[in-house]
Image 1 (cartoon, helix red, strand yellow):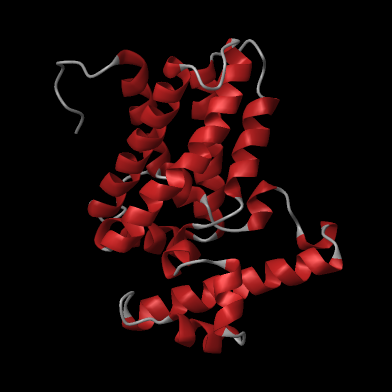
Image 2 (tube, rainbow, N blue to C red):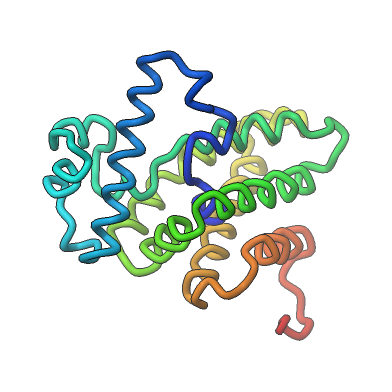
Length: 217
């Protein structure tokens, strides 16, 4: 996300606890986590470009074909997660009469808090790679379509519009683009700011528009 991406860490963030999954699902989750952890460790040690899928497979004790079965590209290991179901479920759980922007603000703040609390170093690494590695940022832009479709469904249900309405699509993509830039700003400034506070500033600007007042310190 974007800020959604910063919050995306593990499946447990949206309630998929290993004990609640079947044996096959637990094995798949274990493999996905092993591949991710190996990838993060190798990137930390030697950099993104120097890390190969073959090295990742060896470190995760799986075959390269298994890595590709779970993640089509190396960039997907950094970006892919199970977080969209959490966002969708949480948005649908908000009060029906709550303004959609406030529902989004609440859910995003919770998502950011969960993701960063569980694995802060992973959150920093992922967002740094989004900024520094063109291939990761390009893949992120490609993956926005999935999150956009989810947002369009929820926004349409809340507002009584069709998911394909121009206004719904524009708002969903505007939100995703804004949150992507929020995360980039956070990473570019050394992750020193409170990401939740930056999300609030972003949501405020989306509501009020870009004013002419003095910039915030």
